[in-house]
Image (cartoon, rainbow, N blue to C red):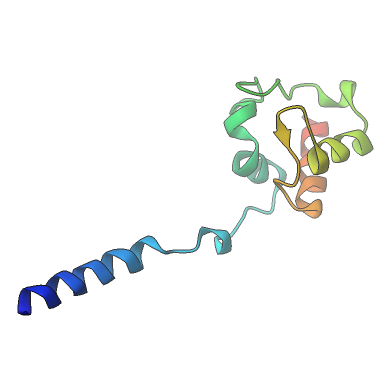
Length: 98
């Protein structure tokens, strides 16, 4: 019976440690940090493109309004809503200044 309680206690501790809520983790507030948080895995660390297209020279390709629409609604394989509307504005301004 004592062994059962030990297994139960260890299981509880393990499960409690695995249930941390990452949704409440502090998200970056700057454009570069938000890019790294939500875009880097597909568009590359240096904006060079990986699974997604390169994000270089965006000012020549899109207006601010068009960029916001792409980020908020998604396009092709890129889903929309990865960032909040305010975060999308921050990333858009950062990308257009690159």
